[in-house]
Image 1 (cartoon, chains in turn red, yellow):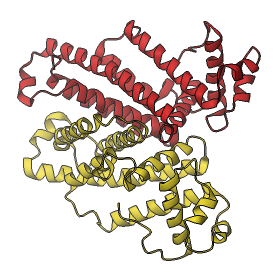
Image 2 (tube, helix red, strand yellow):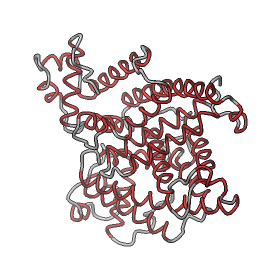
Image 3 (spheres, one colour):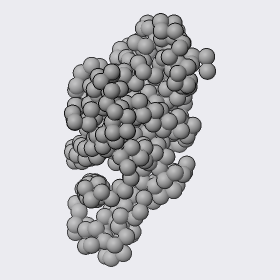
Image 4 (cartoon, helix red, strand yellow):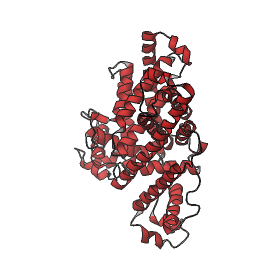
Length: 218
Length: 218
């Protein structure tokens, strides 16, 4: 991914950029406010002035990244046809950056995201964030599924759809999101990579067989 | 799930049972060897004598639970037809214990498993365990997919299979495992439960459409 903090607009963004870099470098468990301060170009004391602790800062980082994603989606920043957009989403979660290396920047970010998400198992602030995060991605996926289904209906007619009964676009979106979440967790916590190709192919086969029976108007 | 430590065979199992209870009660982050010692019926010092630290003990607990699962699978402890076995696996991961409550014993165990799995992002011993764990579950699922496909072929004939080209049972197994892993992570880290029914239904529809095109002999 591109560095979302290449040109920080204000002190908050500069601090969040430092936290992002320090998180990718050290991982969650070894991250301290001190290390974030060291990755910050200005006075480290500014970090303490803005945030009460490491988790408060990291939840704000997650919110900032999710806001950026929401803005990018709303602005049609993903310049791909809907079906290709869905395939790209699955690919990004099963093989981040297209490289099989947890030391690559995208791999390190994905590993850090899994560590932060695990905090939500017991920490309310993280949990609220990931509830919102799952809603944002669900909306993005559901819209993409509707658009891909409309595309599929336009090219194939709707006869095949009625034969199977309609499938809810939201159900397809939740399934893709759950599959991608699992791919992210497996990728970050195991060394084996043999499964990634099979999962992408099956996700693609699932979409090809399902989109024609999705009713985009549901 | 049944308490796997109801009748510990030796001191190791008694300690692991104490660790299991303490883990479900306190969660990973707040778990200490001292708290495991408190959950242990005999002298807490025995825990220190057997294990060098909390993570060494927890990895041994994970290995013990996985060994038990492997033995149960080998002994055909899952007395279900293959297709029902696959559905039950997906259901157990999307709605543990059939209750929508992270305070229920199965829910607390699932939350703890997510916390332990997240350690594998940065800890080699946990990572080796979850590599093995994914292999064990993959074998269980692949065998079940083969058996369910053979059942499906017997009831429907093989004509429909050839129309689509054969699907590898291993690819179906990896897809189910990834979906279930994602369901586990979502369940443990968010409050929303609306997605669980849709994911189970789509997994079932995926299996019903895919099993007839799986070649059990692959």
